[in-house]
Every structure is written in C-alpha cells, then in structure tokens.
Image (cartoon, rainbow, N blue to C red; front, side):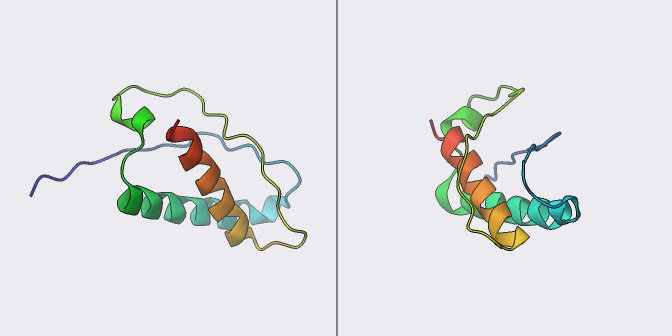
Length: 86
C-alpha cells in the first residue's frame, strides 16, 4: 500500500476575541479536525503542489456567543481546509 504523508506546521494562529486560556483547546480541536478532513476528503490542491506555504488567510467566520473552544477549533479547521481547496 502506498501511503502519502503530509507535514503541516502552523507556526502562528491569530484569533481575535477569545480567552487566552482557551488557545490550547482551540489548537487541539483544530489539529484533530484538520486530520479528519484530510483523511476523509483528501489532499487539497494547494498541498499537492509540494510547495511551502508561508501564509494562509482563512478569512473570517462567525462564532456563536459562548461557543466551546473545541467548536471554535473545528470552525477554524474548516476555514483553513476550504482555503486550501481553492
């Protein structure tokens, strides 16, 4: 079986309006959701080009008041994945 490996390193994630204490839970959820999206939906075009991406602007999204950090991380993962599919 031929297995492909993707190494994705997020050096900095800028989110405004969230409690600093939630950053690790947001990051963990983001990582898990991105892994799931890549496994289930495949490698997006921008990652197939074997080029280092220095910056990705995933845009903005709305978060319901009092959203759990895990839900925020999932939304961030979807936003990043959508951007990579362009």
